Image 1 (tube, rainbow, N blue to C red):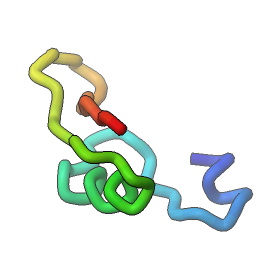
Image 2 (cartoon, rainbow, N blue to C red; image 1 turned 90 degrees about the vertical axis):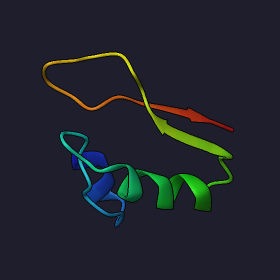
Image 3 (cartoon, rainbow, N blue to C red; image 1 turned 90 degrees about the horizontal axis):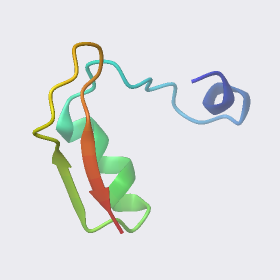
Length: 51
């Protein structure tokens, strides 16, 4: 997040970010698939993002 802020980008972080928020910048970057991972993690939401 610090690097993002230093470069004038959005400070989105990664903890608890909903899929809709993840999908927007990924789609803009040209990714074709964004889905929440089925793998469980007690601290983070995990996403499978494909070009």
